[in-house]
Image (cartoon, rainbow, N blue to C red; front, side, top):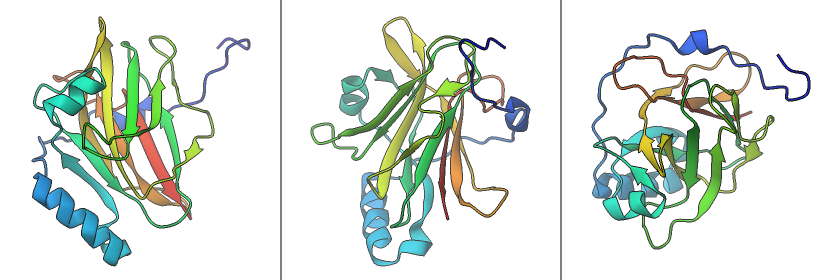
Length: 187
């Protein structure tokens, strides 16, 4: 590895050949109900859920969803650290927004790998998120737009930290979910 441009460690083998079934996305009514529940009873709502994205929202950010879903992440009311890693040939993008409303959505993070086959996705140590509910779109570059990746949620965390990860695969034929991954962790 080059010492001039070091890249973060990322053990991609942990994310190879994972079982995957196509998730069914929550309806807008279910998203609203879950958002309300998360404000009332925090612990029971924490987690990640597939959600449909409107063509208008996808177009605003240059995504082609091709029937794939985004991920709604409900986080606890405490400091949550989000970090990212990638291992994929195409350039990857992780977009984190605070709403599914195309007119109101604010970008909280828009991370891209600097070049193909690079593990760097966002700051090495991550960032602290300012919102309790965020929406994640992961994709890979194709010409001047982004094709949405398939996603998988992993709630397995080793160690004292709690959290979950949004894993993604840019190849629809292979269940290697190490293309564009975000981890949300808290104490």
